[in-house]
Image (cartoon, rainbow, N blue to C red; front, side, top):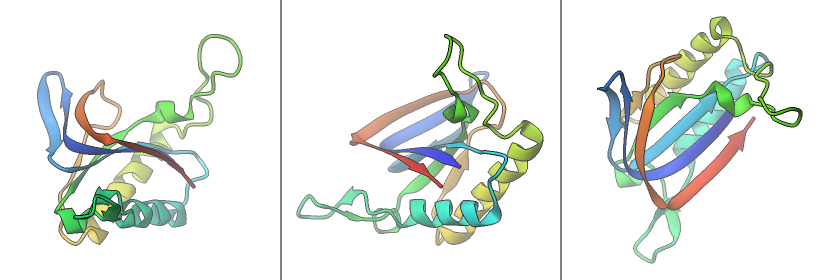
Length: 147
C-alpha cells in the first residue's frame, strides 16, 4: 500500500461537479493498493495515519495528532501511485491492484479508519471516478508512506 498524506486546512473532492466529500483541518490521504496488500498492511496504515503527530502545539512543534485538533480525513483512491515511468514515456500500472481487488481493500481501509478514529470524520472520494480534488495544503506538510 502506498499513501501520500497531506496536512490540510480544508479539502474537497468533486465528481461531475458534485461535492462527494469535504473536510476542514485534517489529512488528505491519496491511497493506492497493490495485489499483495493484506489486512495487516491496511491495519498498520490506518494506525500510522491516525497516530501521526503533524499538527503544531502551542510552542509551534509538530506534536499533536488528528484527535487533539479535532481533525478529519479525506481518503481518495489513487492507483497512479503505483505508476512506473522508468521506461518509455507512458507509465505502466501493472503493480497496482486491479479494481476487483482494490475496491475491497479501499473499502476495508476506510472502514478501519472510521472504526479507529475515535469518532473523527472520515470522508471519501468515489472509487474509480474522475475526481477533482481541491485542497489548501497546511504547511505544506506532505508525507509518503508505504508498507
